[in-house]
Length: 302
Ligand SMILES: C[C@@](CO)(OP(=O)(O)O)[C@H](O)COP(=O)(O)OP(=O)(O)OC[C@H]1O[C@@H](n2ccc(N)nc2=O)[C@H](O)[C@@H]1O
Ligand SMILES: Nc1ncnc2c1ncn2[C@@H]1O[C@H](COP(=O)(O)OP(=O)(O)O)[C@@H](O)[C@H]1O
Image 1 (tube, rainbow, N blue to C red):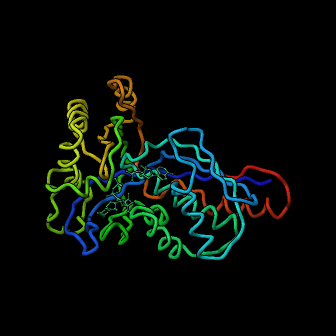
Image 2: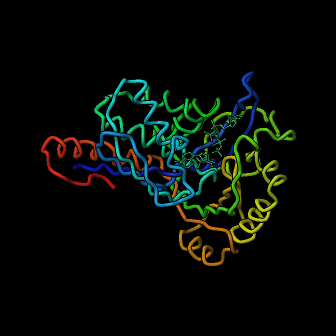
């Protein structure tokens, strides 16, 4: 049997402005997505039925998991009746604002599209992905990007490959709860894509969800304070709970990880302009098809 292994990278929102609200209640955003070189890993094998396994008990493996929702969506859209055994290695904190669920869904769409020989275009996969979550299209496209709308209007950008320290304060923040905060700033003026993206980490740009998150979860305020004290900069990603700091060098992050207060966990990652998934996708899928056609057993990808 041939097994396909694909990465599902995390992301940071280097800034996040809320510029309005749509009639359906969704918020209009402007954000800069930096894709990361760290994330989850998904393994796919052909099977008669659709199943998901994960080594971590807190990760749901039923149909609430975005991976199985993505798989079902592909089946419904194409009429495909094939199954798959999917194994998730979960590394990204759930509900952390680093996009793990959305990225898992995107890797499932791209992986199963190949495993089942569906030949759907990237445009179709991005459109299907948007119905699963606002952040799925950027992971399907696989480029760090300036995004508008609810995250579906995407302009790829080139970012310096900065290193970041990302810390999770051990609390779960619901995206819907932050967007439902009565005092949330929802009228930040629309910005133009700046010529130098360096400025998005300065005071003119911010994360509009930060104040609401700190009000509802004071530990996020403590985390931002800790990061600022140790690195001179700090910002929340998405609707939290993770916060990040840009580092002068990776070693600084490794050193700080040793000093984390109890209940906080973290990792050091580098921003990358092309997703680790898309960096290997073309070659991996070609090898996968070749091995499948030869009838040999192998594990393809990383
Ligand atoms: C705001 C971001 C920035 O990356 O936050 P994080 O979730 O990553 O923290 C995302 O776009 C979030 O995308 P995603 O996590 O896919 O959200 P969804 O599942 O689509 O939406 C969850 C709920 O949040 C609210 N919601 C979400 C996105 C948006 N632009 N406006 C909203 O009001 C809606 O109430 C929705 O029902
Ligand atoms: N494969 C998955 N990984 C993580 N969370 C998932 C997954 N599938 C469904 N979820 C649900 O989606 C929610 C948001 O997940 P996640 O993408 O990790 O957060 P965020 O959007 O804040 O980065 C989780 O709280 C969880 O209930």
